[in-house]
Amino acid sequence: MARIEKQDKNFNKDDNDLIDKLVGINRVAKVVKGGRRFGFAALVVVGDQRGKVGFGTGKAKEVPEAIKKATDDAKKNMVKVPLKEGRTLHHDMKGHFGAGRVVLRTAPSGTGIIAGGPMRAVFETLGVQDVVAKSIGTSNPHNMIKATFDAFSSMYSPRNVANKRGRKVSEIFGNQLKSDATSNANAS
Picture 1 (tube, rainbow, N blue to C red):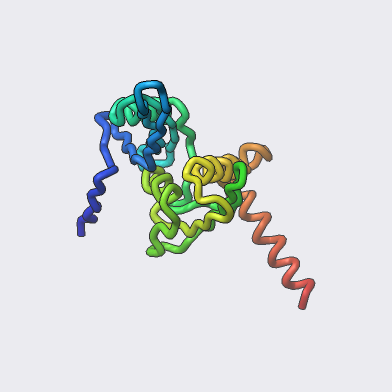
Picture 2 (cartoon, rainbow, N blue to C red):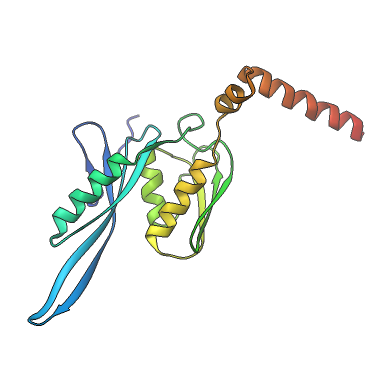
């Protein structure tokens, strides 16, 4: 059965398989002698839905120009995030930036994306299908997204851990299972 994707007005598909999602636009006013001059600041998240994601900001006098600058900035700042089975995170993690604190947890298949506004945009463009996330502290979208990316920087896949230790992935899990069995036998 084919999966039907929900269309979102803030969801655009690029020509090279990058998806960008507009998180927010701020209007700022500068008061000058003749009245007010308005400017716009945009926050955009870009991802390929296969583990690469980035965010960017842009400022301009017009909204489309601000969005374009933010999208270009996001494409420059993309990071690779390892995904478990291509659908969820490898382990639970915490991230913070300023007053923004986030908690990201893995979830079983079928859970969906349980996350608030800006974090939801990050997970949708990243390609995560099952995750539970909670924002603690600020509701500022800039700080929430930066805290989410801080959490991503502390994520390790079993392959990364095995490479650091100079071992095979099976040895990493094999040692884990043996130590658990030994500790359970000692506890009995």
